[in-house]
Image 1 (spheres, rainbow over the protein chains, first blue to last red):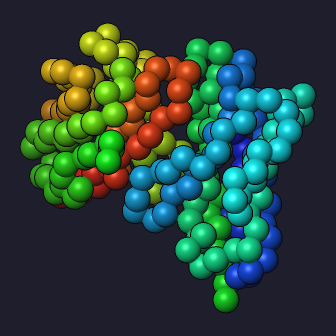
Image 2 (image 1 turned 90 degrees about the horizontal axis):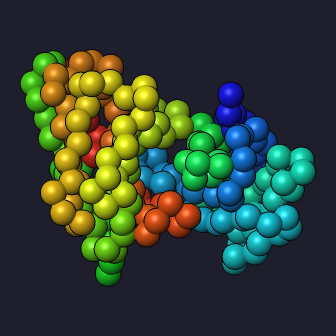
Length: 109
Length: 112
């Protein structure tokens, strides 16, 4: 079966750095996405990786290793508004998105 | 601004009373998706359209139907909502299957 694993919950301090990991086992691979979802709202697109390496976008970076079936989302200079769930999703060989259940990130002052 | 719009944002219905949720998009995307998301769970794909071609996921209950009368609009019909259908319903669009999916704000459905 296809599976996406990410931690259920993480806590970090305002101004710090946090890394949210995602491991996946899917039928084929056509890219990995990270979405941010605030409570009661829809997911918003953060990043896309299809080749190995690091993609940087402001305070957020995303890393991919296809051989290890692994990605992480790195958030720097954490702000209170970064408190949200972060969902990892992999596009499989049928171009269907396989979703993780999300990591709830709690930011403390 | 080009966007994905869902109405209503909150819907309350009674057990067994049909309900329709709507989604519209100004992105002119070919693909429209409907997802169901329950608290602290991954979004679950119900069905999608590529233009007028409809694809129903194998485990989507028959209670859920969809219509796409034109490129811009897509509807989700729940014929006889049960308590287990209470969830957030998310509409998403993408230019094609290889493109990023963009979500509307969602409709939170409560079943009494």
